[in-house]
Length: 481
Ligand SMILES: [Zn+2]
Image (cartoon, rainbow, N blue to C red; front, side, top):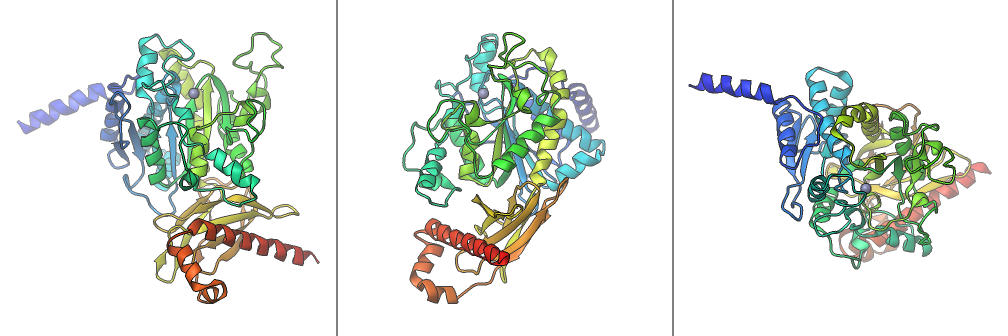
């Protein structure tokens, strides 16, 4: 009886397990993920975000890791999020295809994919807006806007808290504070939608390092900031402190894609051979700063960067928002290498753990000064350590002064060189901090205690960072003379 059941079961599964390139509906999507999990149970986990869509469709994620469900020190986490706009559907199918490919490649002992999964925790959210997908699909999928929003007619990529406004205000005030800004928000421009809330919680809970959000309607890799500083609606380059790194990340996807970076391809919205007056992103290497294209408030990309340690770019995957199913295998081939190479970028820059003599230090601050050129350039965007005292700092090749600090400890600075051609591991740079009592005497024990444990950690952190940066700059100028 058992034997027959098992035999029947495996035959049934064997018949149903082949991945097919098609538009998977909201019922089929979790079945595809479950099937992949059945084939690769040791390296996958399927889960849903904390709340479903307006119409009650769960937001499913498949995770790849050699220890699914757990963060591990030295193993950075990355994510892809697709179908935020319900009528932009290519990313949704590419992520299902990517999940299937990872599993198949792993089973076939593909060295590169095996190494990626053993060194990285990867989360794929194929659809953030299943309700919009349903509407777009039910209405033929060819309308430029129908199905874009969620079921409350809210554009989810305008629904995140506008942290750009906060960082621009702090810039104007000359305050060096450009990370983990969610605590600085005092009011929301609009109520948060359930899909936005679910994704925000996810972003805040998992220590993501690298991310990409997938859209359609053009062919370009777009990087922060999405919002202009002046409020200009178009054509104002809005650089973030990590502009070099973001450009590098965007270029990685664009150049590994079949023709995103092609200078000879026509622009998506060209009407004639002479399209010089229109945006043709191929001519600029397949990348654009967000606000240099057009400015938007409340996007997910900038929220990632300004609320957490994650770096996110936005991928516009093609002119056609809802390509026919017959185009999907070809689109997979055009994107496959880019999807993989981009994930490897999570291993660029430096990483390490911050400890003291009794263990890991969580929420230690990692500040970086680029000392590659003649003039040291602080990157005014710190990252923080996680549960195991671990941090991941994406950087482009060059020389850096890296400072680890934590309230109640002496900060330590070390020099690190990020080499060219970094592939499978970031440079490891660990710090062991020593507690200090002299600082207590110097600046007042009570104020320090409050700063460290209670009322104003952010202000303390800011002054410390400035102090460190100033020390470094002074050292540099002393060296010269
Ligand atoms: Zn979109």
